[in-house]
Amino acid sequence: MARVKGGLMAQKRRKNILAEVKGYRFGRSKKKRQAREAIYHAQTYAFAHRKDKKNDFRRLWTVRINAALMAHGIKYSRFIKSLKDKNIKLDRKVLATLAVENPEAFNRVVDATK
Image (cartoon, rainbow, N blue to C red; front, side, top):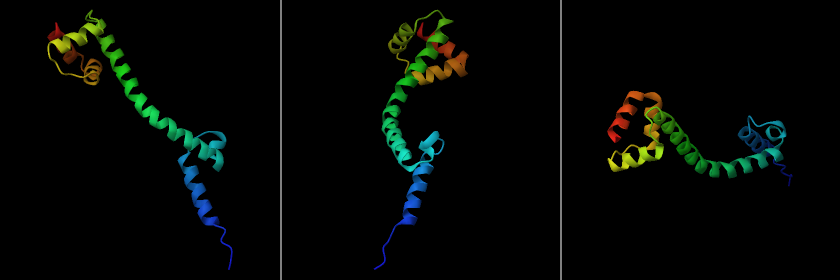
């Protein structure tokens, strides 16, 4: 019986691995073994960084809201407390978007909390 070497499947496997690391630098984008290692690490960190992304954005929204509130002379923590007291249910993402893209509407929200 003839020996089966699996050359075609090896080529396909290598091609798929290298396609996944397209854009990586140095040997990680050209050598199968280094590429496999890079994929392993990338997938490991991708899970953790999807979780971190939520914290990063919340921090960004807080900074943007705080910057917009400086013009009104209000502190961020007091503003958030007054939002809760007045039962205004706007999350930080919406508030930050208003502060950046629609300052008039943000001003009305700030006036409503006073």
